[in-house]
Length: 511
Image 1: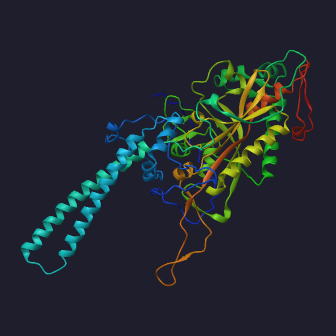
Image 2 (image 1 turned 135 degrees about the vertical axis):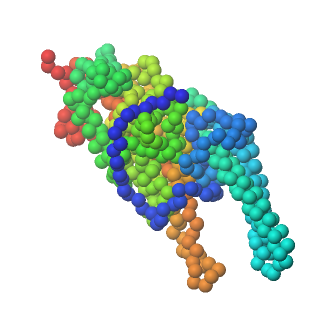
Image 3 (image 1 turned 180 degrees about the vertical axis):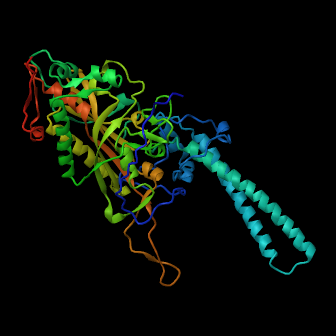
């Protein structure tokens, strides 16, 4: 198995912004998935713990005791999976997932039966203990002592088997993807539906250049030196390109903050378990994650990962919801398997800067926030004068966490095609069940059976959403290629000019 490994010095990074009543236990208990119903269409919304690239595990291998004990556990509703087997099975097929539902159901049934045996033995042990409290003949006591000893030994053995079985069940069940919104098109990427199209392609009266040629002619981008220093798919930004990057980030932050988002910068090294809990696969032949050699840490591919971890294992007050963040970070991706003209230049690189929106909300609010996120993206790109289309992505193109995902693809004239510049995903409670993020409803406490003792309302899992506000390299592709002029210069879109010190035009350098 090939892993992308880095040797980096361990740098302690801390980040504190926790709003909670008390820590949530590290080991999650099984719970019910929150129901999410629409007035016209019944929605099957259950967020399962899944990794997109988990290997298919046959039922015959699922009980292999060599399966490593999981470092963390997700709150998976196995009973719901069993009761909705057909819907889950169809969903797995539609999403082109390799999850093994039969293995999950078989392991769950075995676990339930074994749990009953354990409970029965505990009851018998307790009955023996009660009998020994009375007056007994020595022979009777000796018989009970022997019986209690045998029951204890049998119970210890069964409890050990139960722990192993639960670990195996968790391992296999984490491959089941989230359920899917009923309006999502079924099929591969080509089946995705156009939600909106804005603008039209610019017509040029002169031969156009792609961003690589523009970057070279205007002395803005240096791929050759970066390749010598770092390898392929790295780059230097120079001159006005540096100012353009800063302008894009600062303008994006200013616009999104007006919508009530809190700005963040994040750690860019996280533990592998956090990556997994967010639904990404840090190990495997086609991983997009750089792992740090000799540690359990990885470089982030998106700020979604460290932002998702801020409130991990917490119970939030309902009054603080929604939590809306706009996070800036450097991002690192292996881009395993990416090659060809369609990925050249800045379109697909190993390191880039990005501003990512992230929302934590109540389950009943997540669909409206999904619409808000895509609207923010569309407003940003419209303000920059881009021609783009928004797609409702088909089932096979959804990552394991996404219940529904909208992609924005902008026209890149130099490349001669549309290219993805943004996406917005509603992950429902898929990530929160893995990260252990709950909230306590603000309902009045219910009076308990004991006089004067009140019961707090039961906690619920939050829903999480993420959306790209600005991915710098692809935004630069769009701006350079769409705003090029016949004399080789590039016009700066008006909204960005105040953030570039008033620069309106990037002109060719005098030689």
